[in-house]
Structures are given as C-alpha cells and as structure tokens.
Length: 448
Ligand code: PHE
Image (tube, rainbow, N blue to C red; front, top):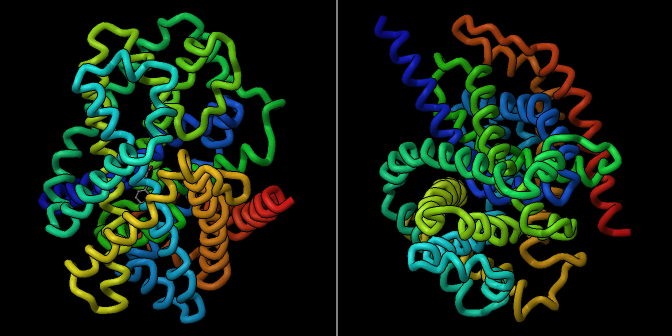
C-alpha cells in the first residue's frame, strides 16, 4: 500500500518537474511563429509525427542514461564510454548559447506585462508598437537585464523550489487561459480560414526546411539534445515508470504548443485582411498578434495582463533550469563556489544578450548568414548543434552501449517497455540517417 503510494507521488513529481522545464517560451512564443511561417498544417503534421517517434526515442534514451548513471550529461557519457566524454561537453554548449537570447525574449514578455497592467492595451495593439519597441536601444535592454537579474537572484539564493511551487499552481491556469483565448479567437472574422491553414496539411507547402524547423523545435521544446533530460533522469526514482512518464511529458508539452498555435495563427488571418506575408513575421508574431486579440475582447486589458504574467512564469522557470545547468557545469569543472559561478554566468548572459537585442535596431547591419543576431543564435543551437548532439546520442546508444541497455533501464522493477521495436529501429537507423540528411541540407542551404 505504502509503496504504491510513493510510486505514485514519485511519478507525478517527476513529470511535473520535467514538464516545468519543457514548457516555456518554446511552446507559447516559438511554436506558433514557426507553424505560421512554415506552412501551417504541414508543419503541425511533421511536428506531431516527429514527436511520437524521434521525441519519444530521444527522451527515453536521455532520461534512461541519467537514471542509469545517476549523473548529468558530462559525467554520464564518460562513465559509460570514455571516448564519448566530448558528447557531454558538446551538449552543454547548447544551453550556454540559448540562455542569452532566451532572456531577451523574456524581457519582451515583462515589457508587455508592464504595458497591459498600466492600461496600454490599445497602444500595444498599434501596428508599429512592437517594431518601435524592439528597434530601440535602452528599453529592450532594460527589460532584458531585469529578466536576467530575476533569474540570477533565484539561482544565487537557491529558491528554485519556491518558484517551482508557484509555477506548478500557475501552469494549469495558463493552460485554461490559452484554451479560453483560442475559443474566443475562433469567433472572430476570418478565423476559420486561419484554422484551416493551421490544421489542414497542404503538401505543396512541404519542404526540407519545414522538416528541419520542426525537428529543431522538437528538441528545443522538449529540452532534448542539450543534456537537460539526462540531469532530470538522474533524479528519477527507479520505481517510476519511464516509458509512460515520457509519453505524458510529450503529450503535455505538445498539447500546450498546439493551443498556443490555435490562439495565434487563426488570429493572424483575422487581422491581416488576407495578407499572407503577416504569417512570416518570425520571432515577433506573438507580440504583434496577441495584443490585437486582447484589444478586441471585453476585459482584454485584464486578460492580457494575466496572460503575460503566466507566460513570464513559464519563461522564468525555463530560464532558471537553463542557468542552473550552466552553473552546475562550471561548478563541477572548476570547483568554484556557487555564488561566484552565478555572478560570472550572469555577466556572460548580460554581455551576450545585448547583441541579440540590438540586432533588431542600431546593430541590424550585423547579419550573420543573412539573419538577425537572435535568429542566428537560435539557428546555431537548434539547427546545427542540437542535431549533431542528437546524432551522436543515437550512435552512442544504438551501437556503443546498445539499445538493450536503455530498454533494460526502462524495464526495471517489471515495468513493461512496450515500444522496444520502435525504439531500437529509430535509434539505430531511422533517426541517425534522417539527422545526417537534415544536417547536410541545413548546412548546404545556408552556405549555398
Ligand atoms: N523547453 C523550453 C521551452 O520550451 C526551453 C528550455 C530548454 C528550457 C532547455 C530549459 C532547458 O521554452
């Protein structure tokens, strides 16, 4: 009796913690702008297929690696095979690249919260409000710095637990609000056409770019290919059912992204008056479209305020988990104190985030590979580094430690691992071949 009880709480606790890291700006900000840009329903379909095959395989492998070794990424690969120590280091670079620009977007979220709470709903819905804001110098940097400091304070004083408890309570509210807003959006003019674009795949929109974007988004949203799930796995109890936990995190994470898309993509059709270029707004999409939705609804100012507070918490918990990861890597490696390491990492994030912010304004002449600085950082982590980490993880599990090592770990205590076949074929053949193809196209596409 007692044992099954602790199993139960163990599983829920694990799923909530992992979902807290997974659900963030990736779901609410990044997913909708990618769906809009890369062909709507076609992207959605690719994403879902990849989530149940690739996402499942990689998350199972990473969590099992962590639970088996009881270590985070750098130690875990090394412990199982000395030659693969580099993989842990490579994986660790990903959060180091992501955190600075993640915090820039986090700053935008605080700015919009500030706008809504001070009654600026109408102003925020104006056509140039967003571009005027991000092309500025001081304002976006001030909000970015505020976001970084809030994250750092939590990490320095070690009060993650408190924040996590608050966000566990806020997360369901965010889900309800997102669903509610998307239902409201459905009643708006032109939304049906947008709904069709969002959920009906149109294969003439399909391209390798769509697949690459869906794959990068999958890694990003589920916190894969950067060692984070390995660390979470190292905290997972042996009695918790690994396979069903992975399935539940996947469903939760994808569900939130789906509703975020439903809230934003059809609304783009409503406000653009049939102008399809509005769909390719990129990173600004959520900040351009949602204020218009809020301005058009009764109590929009209040709902907008609540919405941005909730998104802020989702972003903060993810940023905390990114910063924690970076801090613990350096603490382990150089044996620095926690406080010193936190301050150093904070200084780095502040320094590196500034070009991402200014890249939309006075530094817009810096265009690596023809992208804005923020898009470039995002590209390097999501379309280059993460596929490489994922590829080596597949080779490592498929041919070095063998899939059976993971399957055994997932079957501990008599849990039945139902997807043995799928897992083995995916990790050995389909995933690596696909990843190589994707990497070649991505590099060729940007170079040529
Ligand atoms: N998965 C998070 C999101 O969707 C981003 C993140 C990645 C957070 C890695 C923590 C660690 O926003």
